[in-house]
Length: 212
Figure (cartoon, rainbow, N blue to C red):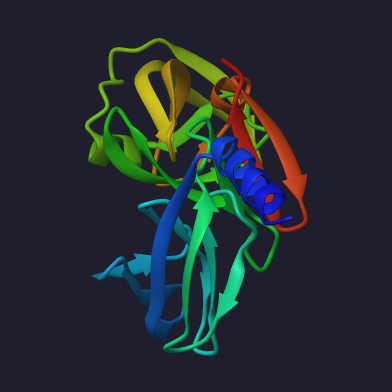
């Protein structure tokens, strides 16, 4: 029996790419937490991932922590996890709905940080003129196109982004539009990016997986 158990353990470990993590919650805030990961302290924002450890949510009462692709776990103040976990698939990224069901995620446009809201109803990645200027996008000489928004018909600049990255998912040469003024407040992660992904919703979680 001992030999059989040993053999089963060897077979199990050989089929799983596992990582070891020691995680402890040191302080709790709204949408932030001070988390110790393998001896190092990090002030993490909701949705942020460090060393395959994701802060799913946080409040003064506790935090939801996800290790790799494992199920999220609830931890209170000074509670910790010390375990092996399945290493995250680098072609996947999981985001979580906020209190009104919207999926927000931090990402990169041409290597510069921005924040997106997932919008399957948007044909293109859409950014405001103000955000485009902050990101250093070149758009003034780009061709214009008419778009129909909630505010009515507008003319927007049609541009090509060198790359867009969400988590470990990177897509090069993505079509986008720049809308005049300060709207939308948050860049829309539209279908010009999402068409390259498979999307699967599981409760409050949305799993994004790169197709190729």
